[in-house]
Length: 269
Ligand SMILES: [Fe+2]
Ligand SMILES: [Fe+2]
Image 1: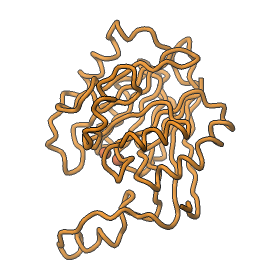
Image 2: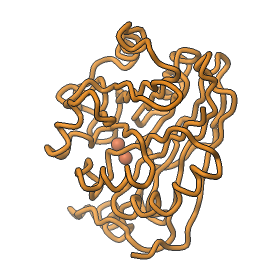
Image 3: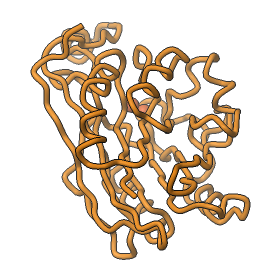
Image 4: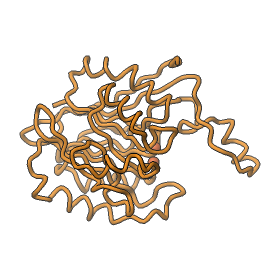
């Protein structure tokens, strides 16, 4: 089965890019299952129910999480509902929900899991359980055995931590993909034991910006030490980034992997 993992959908610009491009990509690549990183969907912080519905309508089947997932109380009911395909990080202490779910698809159940790295930007002191012990407990949980594929995102800042995590789960999951950076890495590949891997998949939204935030709101902070508010960049070139992997449902391993990247001149209102 073809599984697409879409990188951090960053605010309104990111939603529009997904709405514009995803239906055509799903058709062209015969994609069976789409997961999107949802921690930044609504103004960069978490996801509203209204935006969840928009992305579902655009073709996203399931939603992974990161450090911003617990930002909005209105998502808590979905995070806690075992039948709603929305998760936060499994090892983030205080985030609602289990951090993993089995999602039914026409080709069998897919297990989605989100894991927070030990170092996540300025929120490095967010309390977390150990990532490696957390993933061990989830992928060996007998209640989750009825599945044909496992998709894990590792949400963190250290490339060294990401490659170690990838090696650690290689052959035991179908896809292990890094996110949180919003900048894609050039290392999409199949690992030796069969897991599809990429250190960071990148983001969807403004291309000419600091991870989706306007340069004009960031540079005075870094140059002059001003306290500035993050303003989202809503104009100019836009980007779409995702990882596509073909998964053999008998083995749960990847037979091919491809980074899909698209640049658009502008996405109109
Ligand atoms: Fe993000
Ligand atoms: Fe993040």
